[in-house]
Every structure is written in C-alpha cells, then in structure tokens.
Length: 251
Image 1 (cartoon, rainbow, N blue to C red):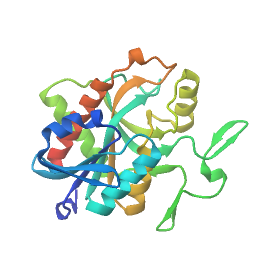
Image 2: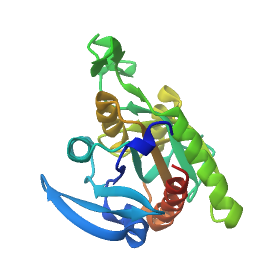
Image 3: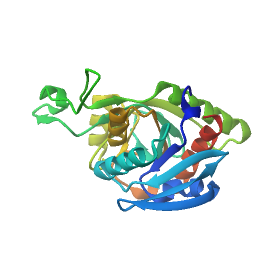
Image 4: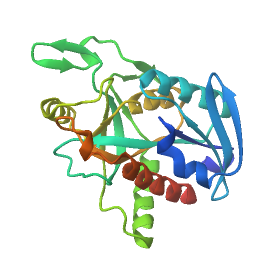
C-alpha cells in the first residue's frame, strides 16, 4: 500500500490467544511489553516488523487494545483476525474464510415493535469525522481487502486447505447468536456474512484515528440453534492465520 513503507509496524490483533498461536510461532526476535494490562509481542514475520496483541473478547476490550496499539506504536495498518460464525445463507462452511467489506454494530440503536433499528433513528452518530457521520456502519480499507483476497489465492496455489473465501458485511454483537431465528433476522437485516464480538469496535477506533484496517475471519461454525459439537475453532483459527501470514508477505 502507498505510504506503508514509511511506517514502522504492522499491527496484528486477535481477541484470544488461540486465534494467534500460528502467528506467535512464526514471530522472530520476539520481545514483549505490557501496557494497560495488555501484552504486546514485538518481532518480525517475513521480514516485516509487527506488533501482535490479544484484546480479550467484546467491544470494550477491543476498543481498549486498539487504542493502546495505535497510541503506543502508530502502526501503518492493522490486521484484525480470528474466528467467526457464518450466517445460514452466507454460502460459507466451517474452515472457509470471510473478509469484511464493512463492520456493523448489530445490536446498538433502538428496539421497536418491528425489531431493532440503527442509531440513525436517534439521529446521533457514533462518530463524526471530516464532516462524515458514522452511525452503525464502518467501511474497511478497500485496498487491504483486495490484498487479503489475493493472499487467499496465494495460499490455495500452494496447498488446498481452504475451499472458499467471500467478502461482505460483518456484524458485531454483544451476545453471540444461539438461535436460528435470531441468525436469520440479523443476516436479513444487515445482508451480512458472519458475526463476531469485536470487529465494529476495532473499525470504529481505526476510523477515528485514520488507520487502514482489514478484518479476516475463519469460519468456526454456522450460526443456528447452538450446538458446539458442530464447531471447529482450531481449524478456523489455523486457516485464518494462513491467510494472514500470506498477506504479510505482500504488504
């Protein structure tokens, strides 16, 4: 990306440690640093200087960690990655990859008789920057999105562990969806591919600071009536990190 060569670090962010286990194994010349109860791992991957951290689950933890990452290290870009649940009509299955075109606060706003409405109903945006108002939606960087899609193609050129990648809207929720009915409601309302618990908060903070962001998720399950026996968190995390590792080569 234009301007990236002038920046010192690429920021890598996941919610929990298992989502970044492959990243840590490949991180060279590792040093760690604690700031605000968040541990940062500083090193190199593919000769690129990176800072990796885990935020903890949820929007508040994600906002906190992203703010510290930006304030302390001024990364040129941030790659947010981890696992996510795909909505029933997404066409994705466990082990596939999703890349966010935009992030949406899925349960912020006003709940009326006909369902949940975004904060635009209130008329108060979450963020105003350069005269642009952001209500529930935060677009992500298009150039980074294209590079993430290219990275998937590079991974599958060498091996064939991932069957599909799709880009589209992501929904961030405070409570993970555990019913088919709720899953259908959210995917229909937002035309979304998948859900998670941190992405919109990270996108919000990156938009505030003007930091380019890409979000990549490995699909661990289909969002339906909750049955964790059908989930594969390890597979989803590993596949996601394969794409992240390949993306780091071309940034």
